[in-house]
Length: 407
Image (cartoon, rainbow, N blue to C red; front, top):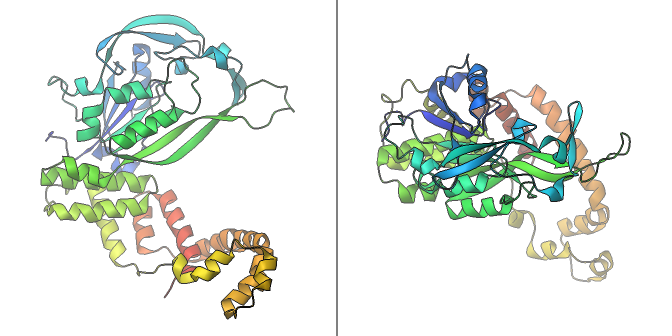
């Protein structure tokens, strides 16, 4: 095991802006080793400046990461943030979007103004190098302008042995010549033990530029996609109990950070199977303290669940949802009170009731109750450690679903 295996190793490729996929949270900064890569060495100082006040250990590496160890060419574009090993696809030259105070047009902003010879290196090779004393990534994010699939191809070993989660800026359209798109990347990661979880943001480009006042929505072009490692994928590879325990708890922390609370709890539960005593070894690691507090707070929560579909509806009533209103009326079979209510009141006005539910429950009740009700034990822990957004989501779900839960 690497000497820094207890800390979270957060790696971001394509770091010109100095940020990455994983959020900066002050209570946990000392637990994090942050590694940022960019093929353009001109931006190294800018990245270091961005993190000058950070409490995390920082490494900035001017590496061009790819699918094989080989010489290559890197295109510096008019807008350097769009620089890539690929050139833009001329089929998309007219695509654009409005950015803050200007139109970003592909043919204008993404044209190459300089080509640089670079040495492309794989992530697997980087971490075979004994000279690099940095822990391999627990979390890997990318903003690499079309080179995502190439980098994954050169990262198969660290995906198997180390990586627990990824946030990848990936494309639905091949804006760059030769690039792979979202489906290719999702399939690749699925084959390597990861779930696609969700799109964290969506960016739209319009195919043709219209005057102001004549602009609508654009095509969904790219997203930041979140992937989490399957628990069984970790357990099938990692045989050391201490490392297995640590990796599952790291995955739990990452999952909770991205609002995947149930998955985080399952990771915590499975980590206990490793039967590791860690209280002393991890006493100075804040994310471990946080996870311990989460576990203790969960024990204080009542075990309540909404009814399941089969508990709510009989099979006959379930089938009748797809019958016409006239056929339901013509059915002479004796109906239960619940079926009569469904037939006479709810079914004929189903969309009206859906709108009422959306307005009264999702907006009025959830908003008012969230202000009035105190935080649950779990929500208090999240707030204590600065995860206020995550606490707000849990509370909102709690106040809505409590209306339909069995006591």
